[in-house]
Image (tube, rainbow, N blue to C red; front, side, top):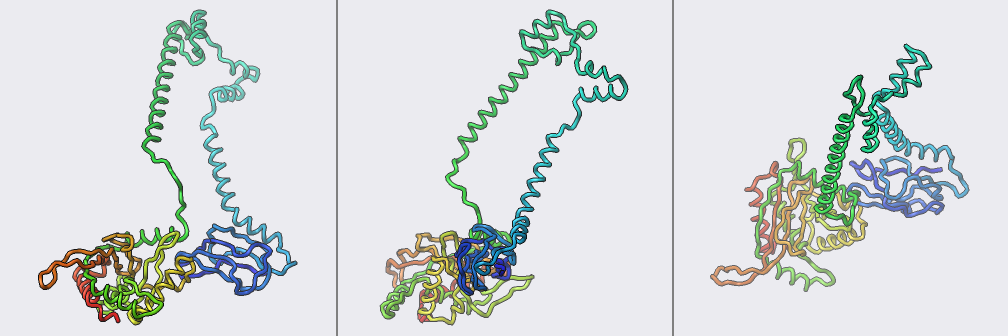
Length: 439
């Protein structure tokens, strides 16, 4: 019998979320065949079987988050049986925490419900048992009420409990005035209770009126949870600042159209041109291709450009490695492959690890400018906005309408200052406006 464990698929991985079992109990599985899909903190990965055999028992259900190296299933021969002790042990181990929590909650309820003080009658009986005669117990239970006949009649009519009324007559006898006073107090208390109830009802009505009705509640889990954690870490630890420029890309547009006519079966996009231009600019200003770690700025030799790409459940950043050394055609091929596999949720861990600088593009959604959050732990991110035609004055003083692209450079102020960022954008602008270096 072989154990199937939750694999450690990354250096920082502590738990894995089981998205889907690709085999069901009783199915035959071969070594190297995909067995299940696991979501790490970066991407969903198919986990292959390390053994030949039949999937005898699945211990972890879809949607469960399991610590690495924990047993999640068993594979064995067709007629091989799993020891009941093993299964019970696994179930017991998983259920112990829930049982312990339930036990504590029950104990808490019992403690809260237990009276803090003994009622007066119990105290009186205990005193008699200790100091008096047992036959007086019944007498202790019955408290004789002294009241005048008129007071008793009024109490019945006005529904006043005489046992709760203090008498002011001779010998503590309850008289008419005592009953009337008690009835008045009861009415006052009832009025107060009604007023409180009225206020609570009004509050509930106001609350319902001002609280928006919930359409759907979506749990924050998987990749969406990872994105939230990383974005919070980035914005809370990195002091962001952003610089914006607008670039005339008429020459870049002409180059793109020319290349797409010359290259058969492929299409160069603005994103490909920007990736190449950004990589060349990082060569010129390598301080942007860095990270801050332990009070040291680490500058990377490799220029690996990450492309923020949307998925069904959120955002992912596949990487184009050594983008400064690739041709536009190679960049285009890699971009198309990465984006397609991201849409099909088929990216591997290596595809989304090792970026040194990130580009995010919302221009296709007609967003002009935006300030993105830096992809932690990088030192910068480039945002690309919409391309729109605007009137500009050329060197001869003529007004023409040219395509203008909006770019934003967000940087880690601990590593970089505004002057360095401005110089980087100047150089990037020059490459995009005179794009001969890109081919």
